[in-house]
Image (cartoon, rainbow, N blue to C red; front, side, top):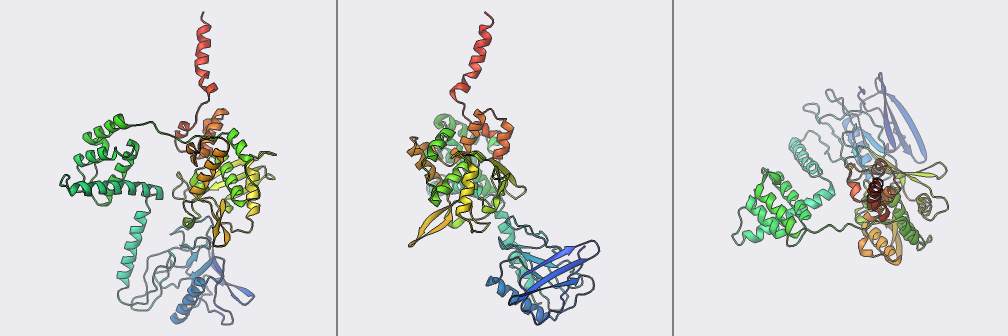
Length: 496
């Protein structure tokens, strides 16, 4: 167990402690290394967790913490910043709170994980708030320092409960992935709009809980505008709305009338899906002749296309939804690229994806070099990294130039920029641009691998598929389609 960290006398000749702190834990002892700087000087003090800790007056502790937070707001240092929490009898668990320099998320003994890949080395345990009865005390917690500093005033418990309630609501909202929330939201808006419109005419029962008759009418009405598969997504949103409002939800399969209506809609108005066309190696070879290696946007677009094709990437990992909505969690950043074997192989790290929602693992995707070829993903990445040298490691890997006033600014590449770039290249090489999109890379890479008779397990691992749905993406060419009837014809001919 980490020993209680108590405040030691700080040498007044040094300025505010600002730079770094960490706890090294051992079975018998715990040490805290504090470093604080004055001008160009830096000095490190080592304190024994058992014997050398003194106590500072409460007023000095408050002044130090206030100064620390003031410096942090001004961003006077760029390394990981920490502050110690004073302990008292019965609350020895509160020792160290540390801020991650990349995502600015506070972390106390892993209680709240940060959102980037930088490891935290702090120790200690986070215990419940509390303090000596009847006396002033200071509480500093995790979560971007949102816990208030409490000094024994009245009403602090109510503030704490309100903060916990807000945090609970936020955690509940984060249970669903952003795309799932958007999908459910579309279904809920469609259902509520339908109910309000028809309820005004006195044609429907109350909105919630929805009756089978209401759901059947909603399905039929929606079929005038959207496909049956979209209606199923709408019903998933209606289910989520019921559960959020505390109503019981009977599955559609157990509602005979609703299931029959949905099946009838499929039979009457169902149309075959129109998947995007896969890009082929021949298509990419033609596109490669059109790329300018002197234009950063085209260079980045081409690198994204090759990485997406050979790595079977989803477009969400290559780009961001909007320029202003950039976050380091989903899309690839510069630190996610690792070159090995004298540029013969590059490893691409995926930290968050459709199948990695909670940071439970990391998926490393290998890409091999194609020496002397314009289709080499390793050379395309190396050229892009060299052109954007000097950018932070947690900045976007694929970028584009955007005009801001009279100058061009480098911003993360968006979904629209990637898709429009693919469509433009497809049109220039004689393809129908309407049939191509961001998914053409992932589907095209899987199809190319399947046509090379690559084991399907390798394809599944490269694209990080959890199921065998990728087999639906792969299209057989004419020669492959003739293999089975040709074998049957040969077997029949051998009998006569």
